[in-house]
Every structure is written in structure tokens, then in C-alpha cells.
Amino acid sequence: MKNNLANIKKAKMLLDSGYCIAIPTETVYGLAANAYSNTAVKKIYKLKKRPKNNPAIVHYSSLKQLKSDCDLNKNFYLLYKKLCPGPITFVLKLKKKSRISKFVNNKKNTLAVRFPKNNLSKKLLNLLDYPLAAPSANITKKISAVSADDVKDEFGKKIKFILDGGRSKIGLESTIINLIKTPQILRLGGTEISKINKILKTKLKFRKNKKKMISPGQSKVHYSPGIPIRLNAKSIKLNEAFIAIKKRKFSDKNFYYLSKNKNLKEAAKNLYKTMRIIKNKNYKSIAIEKIPNKGFGLAINDRLIRASKK
Ligand code: AMP
Ligand code: MG
Image (cartoon, rainbow, N blue to C red; front, side):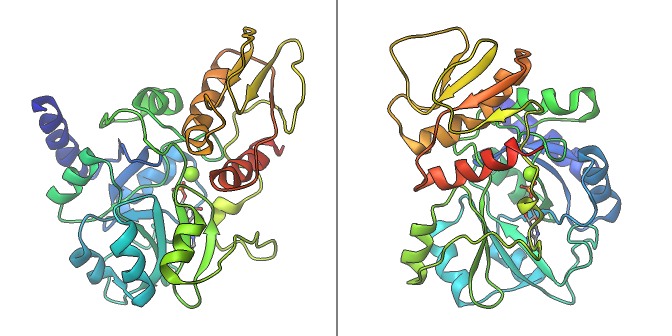
């Protein structure tokens, strides 16, 4: 505990001085910097090699602070009350007088915002006078980091500080919902759409928007382990890592599983971790068993399809 407090203070000191650091969240680790500072936000983009036109999510711990940056509406309050803090990101209208750096959202008049659930990050945000811009702590297009070690694996010595909050509980990015007009799901993620539909009394579905890329997390190649992935695989080939949805009795060296008993939430949590382990064992390719396309399986399949694109 004492250690945590010292680390939170160190994180605050570095953020106050304009550095970007890694922070834990329940979805994945974030690469965070003062969202009101141009120079701090630019450091995130440089380190991640992220294109300027891919806006970052801004993390808040208080509604009061969010109100100074965005216009809040009825749908936002309904979802906020039931789901925050948690793995859901809202796209809202940015206020003209907001202090958000133009580098966060590429000068758009909208902003993606989130209330993360991890205790260390919540405590850190509470101590700060500004919200944190924090895209996922990985090099653009690569696999997201779900532990402090993963962040090290991505950035090595280039990262100034990692606030270690243990393994991310959800292990998959947040669900993104655009609330500016009629609600629209922009990215599948850690909050199931059925939950959102129940709260808003709607029947939203995720539709891939091919023409206009509103949310660059929708870009075709993403979440890539850097080696070919074979989807819907039925058998294990030599020298190929095989990922099953469910644990089996046999245990080949190259056999990995995402869940003990085909639990899709558990599988989502283990997906990036497993892909990173396989990547670091120098396998030349990955085969993955068919994942049921329901519940969290929808988000898993969305990531796998993009990870498998060249
Ligand atoms: P990451 O945190 O790396 O998973 O990426 C954040 C995601 O949020 C990306 O897919 C962004 O495109 C999306 N995003 C951020 N800001 C906006 C916005 N104003 N409108 C739509 N999508 C956004
Ligand atoms: Mg990302």
C-alpha cells in the first residue's frame, strides 16, 4: 500500500512536469499525459508512432471536470449512472471553451471520454488538476499491453515510468459509443452491447463503417502480433502455435487455451496475453480455433480479424 502511494505520487510528479507515463486500467494499460498540454500530448503520439489523425481517449475521475470540457446529454447520464467507472468510452461534443489540447482529437469538435475503474489510476486522477489523454500503451497497430511487463515489452527504456497496477481485469479495450446524435457503437469492447441496449432501451448493433472511418480503432490492420494468424483452424500444425477457446486434455508444447471452459469473458481477458507470449516464443505463425460470435466473442472476433490482416 505504502509503495502504491509513493508510486502514485511519482506518477503525478512526472505528469505535472509534462512527461507521458504508462497507467493501469481495467481494459488495457494506457500511455497517459496531461490532456490540456500540447507538448505532453505530442509525446504520446511520438512514442506510440500514432498518426495524428487518430484521436485519443481522455480519462476522467470527476463529472465536474468532464462538464468543463464536454456537453453532457440524457443518454450519457443514463449510461454513466449504471456503467461508470468501467470499460465504456463516450464520444461527446467538445465545449468551445474546453482546455483540451487540439492534438488529442485532431482539432475535431468531439471528444472520446472514459472513467477507468483501476484503483491506482482512479487515485492518481483524483490528485490531478487535469484529465489524462491515454491511448493504449502499445506501438500503433501492435497488441495492447495488459500488464506492466507488456508495456516494457512494447517500449523498453523509452518509457519514463510505469504505474504498476497488476494485470488488467478486462484485458480488451473499451466499447466506444457515439452519443452526439442517435447513439452508435463505434468499437466493440469490454462492455457488452446488450447491457447498453437494456439501459437505453434500444437495439443498437455494431456496424462496420467501411466508407468513413469515424474511429480509427476501426482501421483494418490492428492489434497485430506481427506474425500470420490463421482463423477458424481445426487442427494443429507443426511449428505453429495453436490457440483453443477451451482447455483440452492433451497438452502439446504449442497448445494454448483462452479459457478453461469456453467462458468468453475469460477468453477476452487472456487473448492479448496469449498472443504476446506466443510472439515472444518466436513461433512463425498462429492458428486459432473458431470463437463463438456472441457476447464477448463479438469483440474477440473483431480483434482477431484485424490482427490477421496483412
Ligand atoms: P486506443 O485508446 O488506442 O484504443 O484508441 C482510442 C480509440 O478511440 C480509437 O479507435 C479512436 O479512433 C477512438 N476515438 C477517440 N476519439 C474519438 C472521437 N472523437 N470520435 C470517434 N472515435 C474516437
Ligand atoms: Mg489502441
